[in-house]
Amino acid sequence: MPTIPHTRRSLATGSRAIQIIVTPGSGNGCALRTALHLRDALRARGRRAELEVFSDLRSLGRWAATGGTSFSRLVCVGGDGTLDTAAAAAVRRSVPFLAIGSGFGNLFARALGQPTRVDRAIDLLEHGELVHVDVGVRNGLPFVCQESFGLLFDIQDRVESSAQPRATWRRSLAYYQTALRHLRDTPLVPVRVSVDGRVVATDAVIVTVANVETYGPWLSLTPGASPIDGLLDVFVMRRTSKREIFTRLLKRQVRLSGTERGTLVCRGRHVSVGPRDEIDVMPRRLPVVVSSKTAEALAQGRARVVDSPHAVARRVA
Image (cartoon, rainbow, N blue to C red; front, side, top):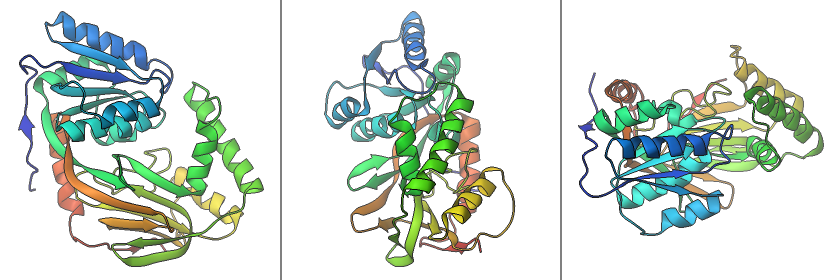
């Protein structure tokens, strides 16, 4: 198997500090406690570590977009929305990025084998390797996980905009309840989707453009997505009855096999969704600290998926 270039880096980074950022509202509410523990543990080891706390993604986005203080590493504690926003700071400064997933999905953290414990985070900072991963750009704004449109985005938006339960099973239940309510009271608005200049659907009601496996094990729509292949995976579901849409999604969640007419997955470098959204990929722009095991696994995955530089539609049915 061919391997991807990766570089071993130590924590010895001269006078520059390790920057930790956190959004306290992420996940089950323990993000701030984790960030404080990491900062104190690094300082106890004689390392310079600074902590910035952001109350919302808007304030984090402003920080990420500015020059600000230089640092040697950027460690982000939070969910996928926080990671998407924070990654822009690492890309802008070309510094290694480490994510401690503390959200509901943690898609990026799962895909890159990122730590959930402070001791593991320190071990990676001291002995990890760097892998440069792709970054998506939607209308000028970067993302590392996914961008969704249509039904799934609307459901997620309704859930996330209300008071969110802490327990995972309650959060999952909230999504089911919101999905049923949304399908019952909201009309479907189809959109046109093109990949690398080729129209793949004119009546899509669910579109997800992903750099990693979409919605992880909870609802796998792009199981073959690789964050290092220089391509974006696109999942499209065409318009049909609301009952059929819900049935298809439920089957995917419980991993039932079978054909799904009107569903397709494709890959490409440029994606257009509707009249306003243009999405591109910046290949290998974000340096991420990973274990040697993860680096090798990513290398093997890259060897499997990079077989065409162009969008190749794979119809499920």
